[in-house]
Image (cartoon, rainbow, N blue to C red; front, side, top):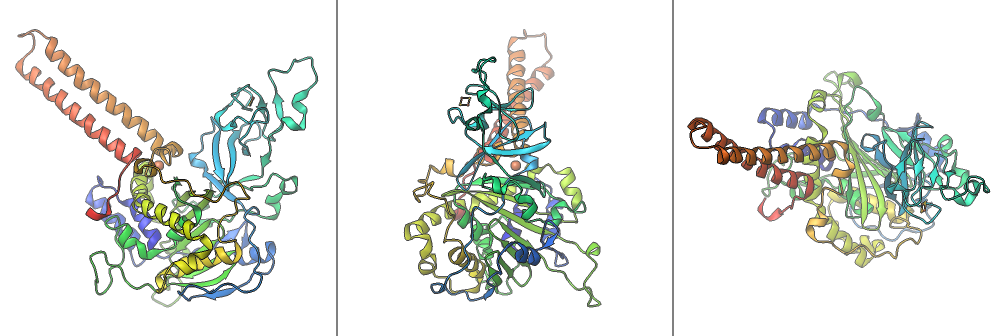
Length: 528
Ligand code: FES
Ligand SMILES: [Fe+2]
């Protein structure tokens, strides 16, 4: 919870916000009175029932030993990476007017709004004609997906409806099966678009048999539900374990948040022993107890933390409606080796006014800074893990304290059930992409801004303001320079000069702000 609290505090770390607001925000996120009641169900089926209904009997065990585990004995149930629902994007960040290209599990898909069916469609991002990416296409006037290379058009089922080069009086070649695009099962749940990564017809109705994990708070109107997403330049495994690791927060995110103060501070940052415990680890994930909070890993994508119900002074559990509740939801998506995508949401049933008046991009300033602050560390760490081999993580890492219990639990789940890493089905050699220049690694524009409606429109608006300030500056100087002596009072002349200087200074400051917030913000731990 602390790790994720760090993230939420990042949400709230608004350097320009007045102190009054900052204090309130700190108080609502760190109040000892905050309680949470979370029940995770899938399509109305309780989690335990879901496990029973959809999976063979789970192997259940306790994993509270922080030490590296010995080799697993016997044959564990095998996790099938391709028989799961995967989130693509929050709906709020999808534009219905254009197709979107997304990669998940190494599969390139095009996501587009099919107005004829009133549904989002997820299809292979390769045109059957000559394999051009359909995500670079457009939606035509009849609501079909048009490949912009030669104009072939497809409907929501993936059927080719038009081949411009085919003579109208010739054979209907567009009806050939070879002219079809493969469609994936998809579903919108919790305001997120999910897809099933298998186009085999046997999975066409998979939604009736297995639903994506359902998170009640996101659909509960009494909760806020601002979401965010970012493409991350390190892999799904390292991303997931990082979000489960509260011990790094006072150090890697120093100054970006406040963690609980230890009784005796051993250093400036305030790290302390943490008694973490993993319970009920099985193929479907695990539950974790962090003392002050509970969390769940729902394999393969969701890490979900919440404050447990707090008994009232009379000893009884408070009514849910009387409690302040919040949840911190992280959805980690495997994209390709060395690349992942994070979708986050922090529903809460208090302080809702803040989300109504503060635009989403303001929250994203702090959230992106949190992600930036350990991004380079994790990128390098992942390369080292790959050098030794992901299956040797337990041997190579020395994890002697209980603060690493969740990370150990997750690595144990990976190794025991899921093959030690994401199954890429031979699409990749296993090598990670090389480390790009720092500016590219910490890029915010392509990893977030273009995929975030709020940041994107703020970026465009602020750029317009910057240009307007420059125009005002140049125009003011121009007027002063061209007006003849005596035709303008000294006061007016001086006012125009001041206006020019101020506009210019403001435009420079704004340019710097835009670059730092929406393009690139280097992060130097040594001087924090
Ligand atoms: S590649 Fe798509 S129409 Fe030719
Ligand atoms: Fe954003």
